[in-house]
Image 1 (tube, rainbow, N blue to C red):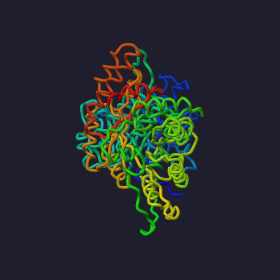
Image 2 (image 1 turned 60 degrees about the vertical axis):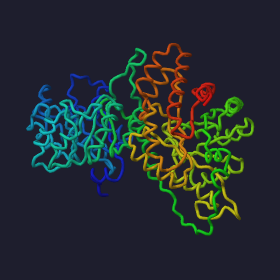
Image 3 (image 1 turned 90 degrees about the horizontal axis):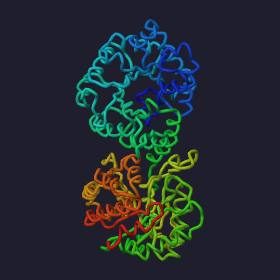
Image 4 (image 1 turned 180 degrees about the horizontal axis):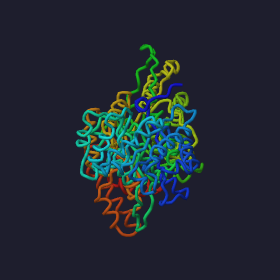
Length: 604
């Protein structure tokens, strides 16, 4: 079978790189007085074991153990005359781990030490060895200055190979010498690498900030490989934040920004890569899930019920009432008595509907449909159920819609859903027959009396479901978010609920941009339960923007009760500033406390 090239892989799909190598060797008790590169000769089993662990984790690119395998670095260990031997052995070990799998490529790693010293000859000697050994392409890692890039380009002169420079940027997308993408682009004039990389840096968060800047300034495919970064200070404790799930969450954001390759650098382990692979693969399927396109004869389509006639909530949407929703997560068990009682409190407080998630964060909870039935029948308040395509194929999605009609559940918010690995069941499979756009289109067809296969539901039978969709004003790729929202509206979406917004200006700008859609927007306004809750949202949920003034206010609020009160005050202040621009508010009940939600919406 013909091996696909690096460029072809980048064009076809998101490519999975491996993680750190030096940190893995250190974990195997090879301490810093050892030449890690020479281990390719003296302890090949240890090197092979690391490569094998990355293969098992799902890596499609194996990076050779040659970060410092140049004459400059090897000299301090007395191995300066073994550059060719060490590099060729490194390629052979990576190639052996990839044996039998044509989808895995070997990348020859060239660290920055020689480039930063301006030693063109040392770089040229190493890349000649890596090429001779059979590397599929070369990565020049951790470049931190324009001068280092210039040195690499000099060394590459006359050498025929596929190559990629990878830079260590700060949060502003700048190198240590102050150079940015304009200077890098100028240096690359006349030389076109296969891709451009971002690696190492001060952890996934800083790399995300850098990627936001770089992605707008480069047309090259981007490969993102953050390091684990430094511990962060939280309540005077230094904590290592980059767990596998934390790393994965950021990798998903990198892909959303257009990264064509993702992996890790210093401190990122096979466990991180495995976690990321289990989430990115279903996400890729969700992104590619096509809307069905079965042609339907016009005479089979019935006239849909107007939104005002579908449900009381639909009638309010068609009117001018300011709507108040509260999100209540179904319990993990099956006792719904407490949930129903909380819904009664919300009904008495004047809320218009209860918003019920569908297996949030891919967790196991009682059905949102059963929860909604109990609430509507026993608490006397309307519900909006979430429906995600993660767990259901086209047949099941249609069954759910028909069941909702039978039990008078007339409002559904369609979302694509979190990949299973973001929850409690890492080895469950995501379905993703269609994404949220496809689900809205499916519901629109059912509302016209025809199923996904083009068959009538029955003589004059049609559903009457109000279709809602989500939107993220904080999206790190606003153009993509706008484009997808436009497709949702075209498919038949009748209302929008936004992700929680803590910066009113961000929401107001978003609402102004989409005003021409003329679809009601219900803003997500969530109160912080505590300062810790605010820290979590700001530091561990990529894409959520929490202004500094809110963090300061929560920090200085006082004890736990005072912090909760401050969170409510801030949410009310945000709501007051955005109310003229939106049709309603969707708030939350932090940790199940509906009284907090009631306080946020009191007298609104």
